[in-house]
Image 1 (cartoon, rainbow, N blue to C red):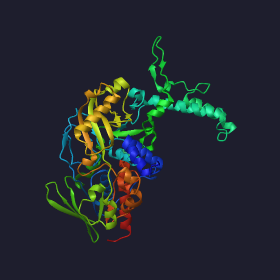
Image 2: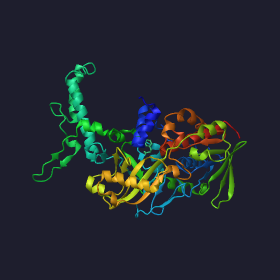
Image 3: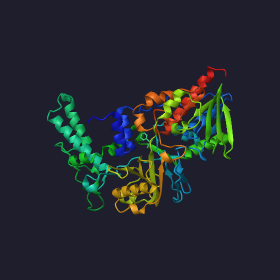
Image 4: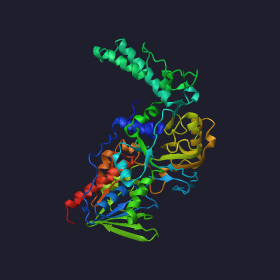
Length: 519
Ligand code: PHE
C-alpha cells in the first residue's frame, strides 16, 4: 500500500514523535528551508509618529512587535491574558503552578536553581533574529548540547532490548555501508556511474569515511567506542565487535541517528542561562507598562479607520482600547473563540484548523547518566515507547541534580497525569535500568490543556496538506487594520524565530500601509 504524504507524516509522528515527523516534512519539502534576512531589521526612528497600535498577546511575536514599534515612535499597548510574558516560552521552577483546562493543578517543587523549559528549549545558531535579540537585550546564552554520541538508542526487538550508544550505531552503520559501496565499486558494479579516474579516489575516500581495512572490510572501529579505554602501564584499549548490519536494519534507528543532521537541530545550539523565559522577561522589562498583564481580550472589533479591542483588566473590570492598527498574535484556536469582526475569508480559513497536542514530562533527578553513561546533554531515543526520548540537561554538568525531560512528543491530551508519569518512568527504566526510581518532582505539560494556548502549534496533518495553500495566504495579508503574527504566520512553525520574523513582517506591512494612506 502506498501511503499518501499525509498518512505518512501522521504515521511517522505517531511512531517516533515530532522529530522524525518534522524530518519527514523537511524531506518532502513541505517546510521551506529558512532564508536568513540579508539585513538586520531596522525601522527609521520616528516613523511611527505616535500612531496607536494594539498588540494581542505577549508571546515572542507580540513582544518583538512592541519592542520594534515603540522604538520607532509608535504608541503601543500589549494585551496579555496571563500574569507573565512569553506565551509558550515558559520556564517552570519551584513554585510554578501548571493548571490544565480540566481543572487539574500541579505545583513544581524542584530544588534551587533547577528549571524546565516547557515550551521552546533550544536556539539554533542559524536563527539570527532570536540570537540577535538576545545579544541586544543582554540575555546571557550558553551552549545547549542537543546531541551527544554517548546518548542511547533503544529498541525492544534488537540486542535483547539493551540500549546501544549513538556512536556505535552511527559508525557501525557507516562502516557497513562504506564496505558495500567500496566493494561494489571495486568489482565494477558501478562502472557506469563512477569513471576510471574517480574509482580509486572513491575507494580512498570510503576507506577513510567508513574506517575500512586495506581489503575494504569493515571490522569495527574505535569511533564506535571501546569496551576498555587505553590507560597507563599495560592497560590496552579493547574494541567492541561491530553491531551486525542485519540487526541495525531490524533496529531502524535512523530517525534518532539522523536527528542532528536537520538544519535547525545542528550544533551550535544555545539556551539562555537560567531558562528560556529570560528572553520574554528581558523584552517585558524593556517595554515596561506598555504590557498589560491579566488582560484577556474579549472582543476584536473594526472601526472605520482602525480597531477597538475590548478586554478585562487585572481587576476584572471591562476596558477597551482603540488603535489605528492591531497586530493579533493569538494562537488561531484561541482567536476563533473570541467574538470578532474578522472577515469571512479569515474566519472560515481558521475555523477547522487543528493544533498539535505536544507534551513534555520533566523530572528532577540525580545525574546518574553523567557518571554511568558519559552523557552530558543530548537526547536518547526509544523506538517502541512508552515514550520517545530522554533529553538530558546541558547546564551545570557535574553538579548533583538536574532536570531531565522524559517524553516530548505528540500525545492524546486526555491521558491522565499519573499515566503520563508512569509511561515516562518506564521509558527511563528501559534506557537506564534500575535508575527510574530516583526520579522525583515530575511535571507534565500537555499544551492542548493549557489555557490561552490549547495546543502547541498548527498540526502536522494541516501543515502537510491544506495549511500553506488555503489558511496561510489569508493570514499574511491584513484583514482591514488587523494584521496577524506568530509562528503560524511563518515558514518556521514551532520556532521562536518564525514568530519574531512574522512580527517584523507585520510591522513592514503596517509601515507600508501608513505610507499609502493619510488616515
Ligand atoms: N522547535 C521545536 C523543537 O526543536 C519543534 C520543532 C522540531 C519544529 C523540529 C520543527 C522541527 O523541538
